[in-house]
View 1 (tube, rainbow, N blue to C red):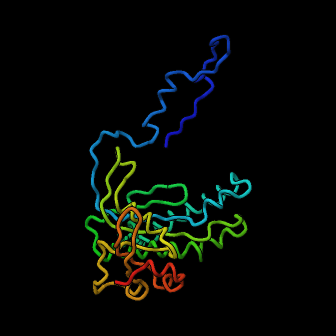
View 2 (tube, rainbow, N blue to C red; view 1 turned 120 degrees about the vertical axis):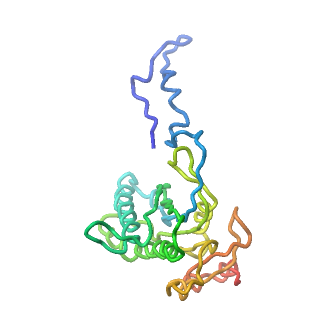
Length: 262
């Protein structure tokens, strides 16, 4: 994204009412406008895309950034983390290497965005089979699991007290381009963001738009996923949400009451 960093030549020193003042030149002042957002032509008509949105969130990242000398610790964490996460997104979509290229379970995400404490990832669901869409869900959970068991151990000698868990919420719906497609908005993005913050869980997906009764559904969904009804802030009072049975069983009694059986 563009940054606003005036140079010394963008200022002029003048005397006003007997006092020396440092003024920002008008031309530089006017450069601080909507183009700073990096969204391109904001007058362009928005394009709708059938999509699956996933929001990955680093639990405890704010606390991690507040430790001593964060300017040293944060880059030491973010560089390997984001490199690892993008590589895992790529590898989870890969079915097999061939001489001429890579066979994929489903297409790679068409949009990724760093959001300060995590990543927004969006796949196009147009033309995807239900099996491929379930692969996206299973892959996001696999990445969360690998974060704890594979990625964190690699940081022991480099980073003190890194974020302990990678959470993820997934939802299917429609996203809409902003400007020239440099950003996207939509209810499924909001839903995914809300789901990863539900109490007591680290992984959840909205039931809407996913066929879990298909004969080809894997054991991950039939044995490890349960559907519950819950109020999702700002979205709905009776949303059907799929969560991990193992996480539900470990919840405190107060949290369990929030997840109503259907």
